[in-house]
Image 1: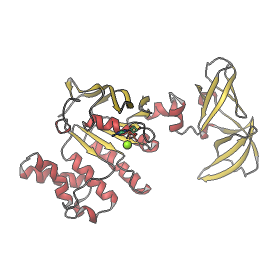
Image 2: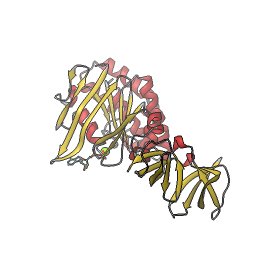
Image 3: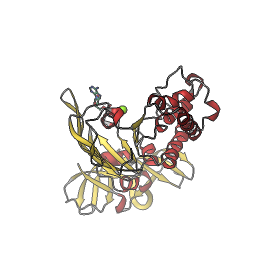
Image 4: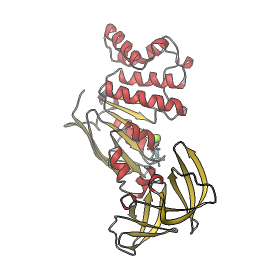
Length: 341
Ligand code: ADP
Ligand code: MG
């Protein structure tokens, strides 16, 4: 069933009096790729399972346009699911695993054949259609699981950490595959991951969760450039997260650093300052730090240094400093983000 938008309104789920998910509100447009991102235990699977109908809600509601969904059993929502464990039938061939759901729905035999062939082709398993899951690699099994979900032409595809059992290289390949399928089939996808890079590369919008609550919803660029909290900044690769104090309007000091900022918090405020390694640059007249570890990263090196207060900081530079060198660092005030502590 097609739809224009799918809305979660104040979705809450408790386990034994403890909130696993609190007040999640989100509207997903048809065709969007949404990632739910956050550390283990933050409520991602709970949110996905509430959406799928595998978990009843403790509060709130879910709507597909003006049709209420959260009171419907999973099979009546028309969603496809792909889990971390592939959950394939071991005794059925690839083809029969993919065809299974269509047969359950009593789709005519010729159409089962046509749609199954199409799905096998989409996930590039033509040469393996007659094999059993046990004869396939992890990545191929995951493709079967994806084909099995998309062959039903679901209005929404839900994926819970589908790549976390694969090795790094395969994870990258399958990531591209998933994005390609999403686009070519015009799917709407909700994808759960704890991997920020995966979420940023796949999603049109990310929902960052922490302890069951939404910290921020936004496009990759919005989260990257203007994280709403120090926690989101941490997830977005702001490796320098330092407790400091606003010493004067437009200046933060502490942890052995003094940096300019556009923040308008009043002098005396205790703050958490976030700066990405690439925005902490080696510059004359900056704050002195001592280089400790230099890691080769192609055109640049990643440097771990220590401030005079003994606090580790991370920076990147095209120079080639050596451990023990003293360099001075500075940052553009636009890129020094300040959060109330
Ligand atoms: P994530 O998928 O982000 O790792 P989950 O949604 O699985 O997190 O879990 C969120 C919180 O809810 C955790 O504290 C977890 O222990 C708790 N939780 C999840 N499922 C259950 C359950 N069936 N019974 C009790 N507590 C649960
Ligand atoms: Mg989970």
